[in-house]
Figure 1 (cartoon, rainbow, N blue to C red):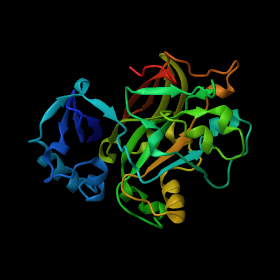
Figure 2: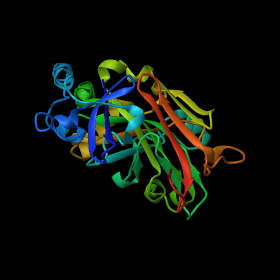
Figure 3: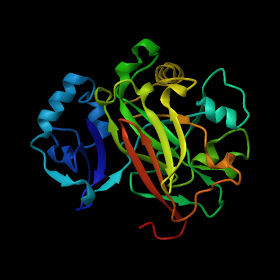
Length: 293
């Protein structure tokens, strides 16, 4: 099942299940179904396969909209937390000449920096060093703490694609990454959340990034230093994970900063992040202050 958040043609926000070229509008069934995808996760509607079957049955009577007639929002527009993991693919660690970390490198991204599929990434006026980072995102299904890695699968709602756009100049001001990761409209997220029953073992999936159609990054998810169960175990130890929380698992080698010459994103560029079995996230780049459409 592919779960998405969107804005309808009438301007109202909703969520639903993508089905081919259409989306079933689950938000239109409120109050029998929760009004948002995050609320649906919190209600337990998407906690396991039995619940998914029940949700599909409820959604069959929902209004349908063509995907090209709605505006994609980040699948979880307002997560309680976005936990980002740096230096987590061996290829990216090696291209930067760094040591393999003994523990996950954690930083945060703010929810208001995200944009959905087919929406504009904004290159800020403060710097031209906007870089791409194709990543796989994990969305948490239920409130949890102290999750052991053997139990991690039980708290995963699904997987999505993420472009953790980085303003390198600001990221490198200090050893803390946060400023360079939180410029407005630099984090692409989507197009939807694909539930684990459709994906299978996410470690077998391939992460690919393309800039203007040219492949710039490729790796299998099993190149992660800290895999999904390890990250859930680690993060749920230092914080309470809530339904709809997002863990962005890191980028692989091939980022623009380490190319010669560097490949910075510029207005007019189109960036695609694909996770096989999950989806393809597509965003275009505009300059700050310029029209986004």
